[in-house]
Image 1 (cartoon, rainbow, N blue to C red):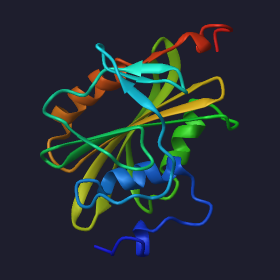
Image 2 (image 1 turned 90 degrees about the vertical axis):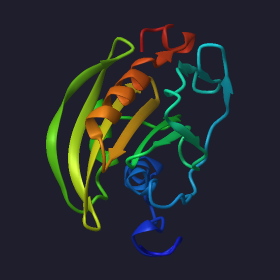
Image 3 (image 1 turned 90 degrees about the horizontal axis):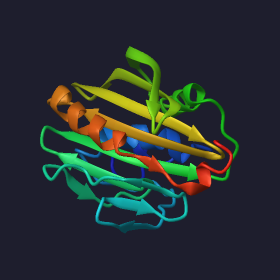
Image 4 (image 1 turned 180 degrees about the horizontal axis):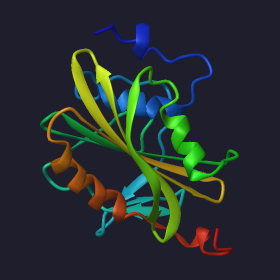
Length: 190
């Protein structure tokens, strides 16, 4: 595996944090490296986690998932297998449709095989999901992403698994399914 800051793990000039989120998620089980995207303020609540600036809440991951502090993601978790899941939110920049934003997540992955893709609802809003396989060294990694666009914000959830994908997917789906947008998104229905 390349050293931190070199080769395929080094941040590329002009690469977005979103594209790096997926590529990085594939490596979380192997090495916890940062790639220079800003993280955001969150607070713990009785129900889960609240992002104050981007105005949303989400439940904590199930207890079998260990929380990691990974720069560039709001929340990241690891479970044996190896399995990782993360959430990144970005606001304030122009956004396109969820489908187009989801494509941007995987643009830097060299080889991938699409397994499934299509519309999905997140907190009652149109979103996009995709599942694909990619190779990391001699291992096939299955990746699932969920992308939501609301107002000027993009929310991306990424699950990467080279172990028990189906078991990890159940937890992943429950986790992103607990996501709720706050009042700022209700004002104009955006």
